[in-house]
Length: 269
Ligand SMILES: NC(=O)C1=CN([C@@H]2O[C@H](COP(=O)(O)OP(=O)(O)OC[C@H]3O[C@@H](n4cnc5c(N)ncnc54)[C@H](OP(=O)(O)O)[C@@H]3O)[C@@H](O)[C@H]2O)C=CC1
Ligand SMILES: O=C(O)C1=N[C@H](C(=O)O)C[C@H](O)C1
Figure 1: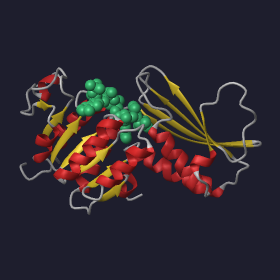
Figure 2 (figure 1 turned 120 degrees about the vertical axis):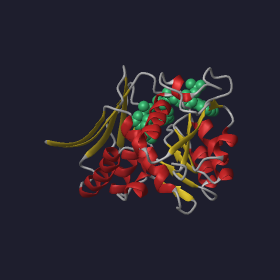
Figure 3 (figure 1 turned 180 degrees about the vertical axis):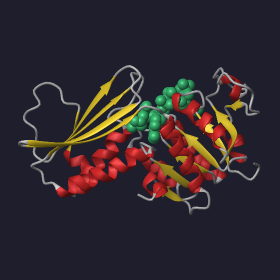
Figure 4 (figure 1 turned 30 degrees about the vertical axis):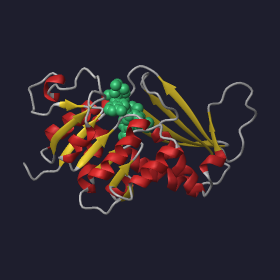
């Protein structure tokens, strides 16, 4: 057991944080060695097993990332952009694999993360499930096969507490469609239609976001032409699929050269 990779979970009280803790503890493939929360959080100093309503597991929640990372081989980070950028620098110092699931990152955040990847292995993806990453590949292939007579729309639905839109997954799917078509996504991206928008521009890739209830995550890529339509769809019903992917990425990252990787690298897709 002692020779298994030691894992720290950031944002351990969050929806994904809790799922990541449970996944690591039950995996038999890694050891949970740390759990992080912000200073002042009510769980600081408490055993994470008890915080989750079970037996103590011997890991206290801390607000000291460097101390936690000193005994770890990987950090699983599904938190918020500012925290993730800070964690990328700390993982680089500790030479720990940084698995990033956080979405809503801006160009400057990604540039900072990529700088940290000169010193450590970073695996970042807006969606860590096998099914979505396969859908990304399928989207790229379908977009490559069709011309701009086929309008591409990405529709996503998530729970009412999600703070960013379009979702990270929707952006991955849009990027795959743009890559397949050989165009720059920024030049054709059409998100947030409202009011008199004018007719759809040929070649645009549209995004629409639904927020409500406890929807875990649903994504559809629609290719719509005159007289016919293709729809590629993924429905997540359990956050465990993301946590399993994140743990797989942390294990895969052990022994890799420093650099910025994604789930396609991990899954070999
Ligand atoms: N890539 C993927 O496969 C997936 C990605 N996600 C993404 O993961 C992120 C988190 O989602 P979710 O779990 O639903 O969100 P939650 O809000 O439930 O959890 C985020 C957690 O991070 C904590 N946090 C924020 N800043 C810090 C900090 N500086 N230090 C320590 N902890 C911090 C929050 O604490 P506090 O409450 O105090 O702010 C909270 O506990 C989102 O960006 C989401 O889009 C989600 C699912 C799958
Ligand atoms: O915030 C979420 O919940 C999710 N976020 C990711 C995204 O932005 O695509 C992945 C998943 O859909 C759940």
